[in-house]
Length: 231
Ligand code: ADP
Ligand code: MG
Image (cartoon, rainbow, N blue to C red; front, side, top):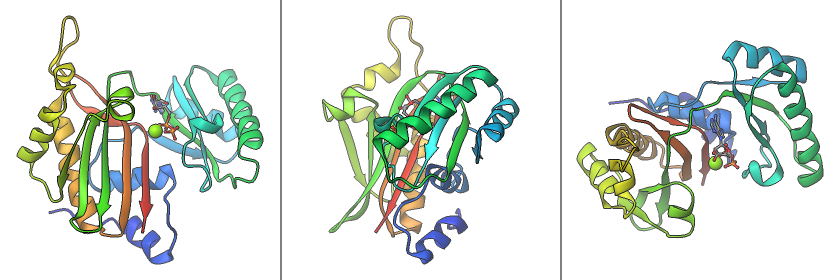
């Protein structure tokens, strides 16, 4: 059995209602959910240094308690290949954010490893007033947003139930592999679902959780973005 996340317990106690991506990813790590390597930079010089220590290519993202959808305000730059590009991306993001989210408080810039592209899936959780925490699974992009091709289960779920959730989406054949595309590691996804189930059971204050997207590979999976909202 895992134990509650110390960071999440602290934030709940403080009364704050939303976690920064950095915090949400630390909570994920507390539950053994794989996430991209990341570091928080306070200025441009530090951003370059941290990018070099993580290794190129990297991704830069704005960190602000007032910005929930980072790419909507021009707050994300992917595939940043060298120190010069880090400086460019850093100032572009700040410019975009100042323009599109004028009043946002800025905590810093998240520098993270660029996950190789894979099949994008989404694991989510919402709290149903009647049934309590429930888990959601779907494939990324149009599958969830346009086609609403998702499955739900009330938490807690077992590894077997998690596997069922994955098999039940209409897009499942894409995970099984087709033509030249190898099968995705559905066991790794099921493990993330079970670990998320533990997290939301142990922290009933979680109102919404979104791991969107998770990159899934032939072997393993990695959470690229994480969002947690509290009641
Ligand atoms: P938001 O959902 O707040 O707009 P994300 O962190 O999800 O921001 O980033 C937007 C998109 O950029 C993601 O859906 C993903 O396609 C890509 N992306 C973000 N971080 C990474 C990363 N570390 N590696 C690879 N791709 C990434
Ligand atoms: Mg996202």
